[in-house]
Image (cartoon, rainbow, N blue to C red; front, side, top):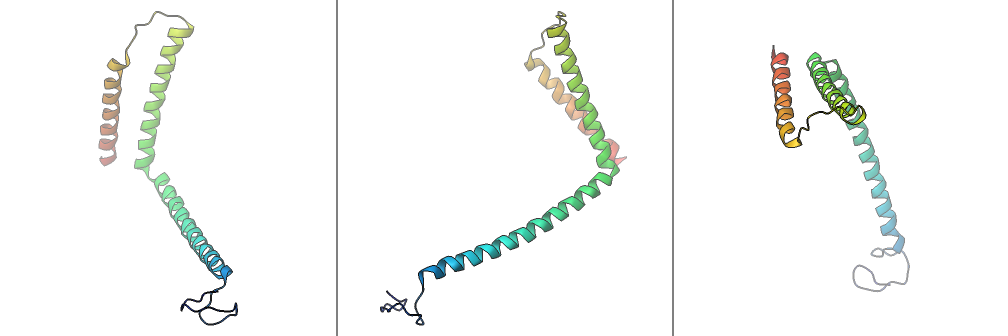
Length: 123
C-alpha cells in the first residue's frame, strides 16, 4: 500500500495512511451535513413564502386586482364557449373570425384592463 508521503505501508494505521472506506465515510458525512443544511434553509424559505402569501392575501389592492382579472378571463372564456356552442352544437351560421383579426383586440382589452386596475389601485 502506498502512503501519501510516497512510501509503502503494511496496512497499519500509520500517520499518513488512508483506508479505502475513509473517503466514502467522509463523503457520506459531508453529504448528510449538506442535506440537513438544505432542509433547514428550505423550511425557512417555505415559512417566509407562506407569511408573504398571507400578507398579500390581506392586501385589498391585490385582492381587487385578482377580482378584476378573474372576471375578465371568466367573461372571455364564457364568450368563447358560447361562440363555439352556437356554431357547432346549434349550427347557427356565425361569421368566421380569423385568429389574425381577433388577437389584437384581445391584446388591447388586456392592456386596458391592466391600465384601469393600476389607476384604481393608486386612487
